[in-house]
Image (cartoon, rainbow, N blue to C red; front, side, top):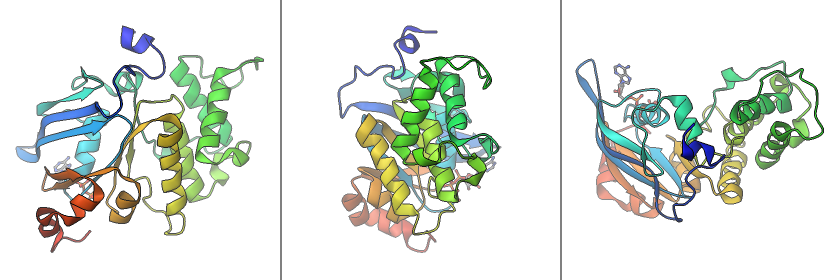
Length: 267
Ligand SMILES: Nc1ncnc2c1ncn2[C@@H]1O[C@H](COP(=O)(O)OP(=O)(O)OP(=O)(O)O)[C@@H](O)[C@H]1O
């Protein structure tokens, strides 16, 4: 474990507010000789919510995969809290403070909601994953799990099976699993995907709560413009594998280049 990792659950908090916490520099990736992403230089400030959006095929998922370590870029670098993480595997990025949303499929459906989050907390704390271990008077993993469930607003469902949660409840559980280690940066891949329109405002409020109560920097990959506008301090618009604009929602919406990129493209 490095000094940064040993410093605790939120490594590198020495950077002041507003400073870049996550940066890509001239990031590119070619797959099978085809350039999928080119020259993406994105700077995410500490404590902001940034939405990455763009039409289908713009390169959002590819960028998400490179930030989280699932895919290696073929050019450019990625920096987290001033440290080059381009070649770091997923688990080391997590230890350095970068968390990503989990898929619903990674839940244990027959375990309770609380047990699911407690397992994630134990993994972060580096302890045993045994559910049957003796219950101690103080269990940091359990405390962290309960706190995460309160933040996302599903504490009332803690003792019920994860499988019994509604779709919206499961999306909140995904957020709880991702925040349980108190990450410095949280990357969410289309957090509202598959949700009914009436459930969306509640989840966007949960995401805002995570930032407001924990100061977590949040990058969400989104293709719903309404969600991005409602949540984001800044929006990064991708188009054909390049970064077209990165600015406040108002400025992005007024940007002629962005408008023409979206004309003729189904959102
Ligand atoms: N493994 C791959 N092999 C070949 N081409 C790929 C691969 N992965 C992605 N692409 C291509 O790269 C481009 C960007 O894809 P990506 O999935 O990143 O876009 P996206 O913005 O996430 O799209 P969507 O909103 O539809 O999910 C697309 O043209 C896609 O076909």
